Length: 112
Length: 113
Image 1: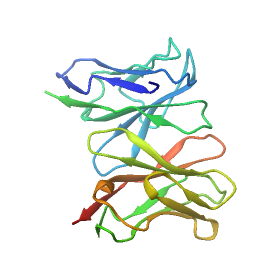
Image 2: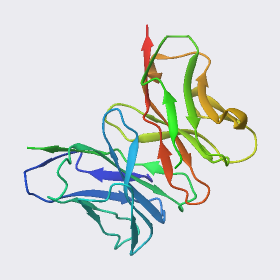
Image 3: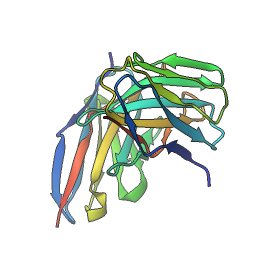
């Protein structure tokens, strides 16, 4: 069954802690994306990767970091520098930047 | 900068009534246009998209949208609402130069029995 998986479904962060959100796809897509969703707002792009070992900042990259060591995986780290991390985080992938994006089920990050 | 406006953060219709969700964009060059649906605490699912060709696009679950260049609009419609249509709907626009998606703020569709 092809698709995009995100884990965990819920994640709790303590003050000053870094946390990593997982995103895996078995669709053989080259491009992957991370979005942040806040209530009443559209999605905002954090980082995107066009191909393995390459990634670019989106509109709100401050306080976040990513890696793309494998085609299937694009983990997002929320660092302690991100002062307001509580949000719903969505991972997406596409064949290329020009193609339609498909989304994972999301991870909800809460601060303790 | 390109922008997307969805009129109405909440739209309420009766079951069986017409659904109309509005989306306007700001680009002077016809972009790629998308509608996605999101059920509570889930990811987004593609409903339909317009890239080129026929301006009336049919999607899943009986939804369709019409691209109107003169009005810079891409409104989403469904002739008869079903309770299962209750969800949040997002319009997005992709610039043909950098392909990044610009998102509307979303419209929550409420279906009254």
